[in-house]
Image 1 (cartoon, one colour):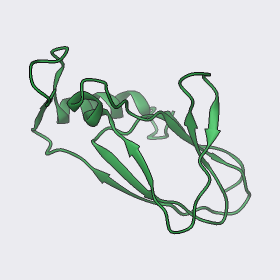
Image 2 (cartoon, helix red, strand yellow):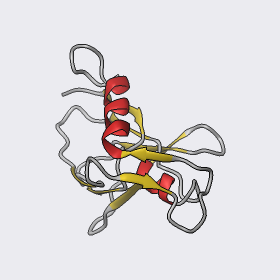
Image 3 (cartoon, one colour):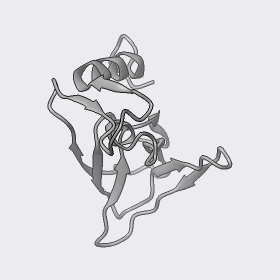
Length: 128
């Protein structure tokens, strides 16, 4: 597999992602919004990583921001991590939930998904 970027910077499309990380080495990095630098998110035994996704951001009107992250291989061995993606139904309209209209953002989840996928992958299907 080798070292290098395994998955470039992105936010998860849905509501919440739960990740069981490979304990053999750390590859997940999270963007520090204050400094613009990358922080490692090393695996912790018997713990999960929870990433807030884009739809949670919409639901809370930005109070909880989706988590920009990437995967950088730091070892020449394979890494296996298991994500669970909690997402709305494809035809669900997602909007601010806490009363009022928030900033008025509304998105049909399938439209958001198509938009993200079409900009995250090049014509060969490789992640950019």
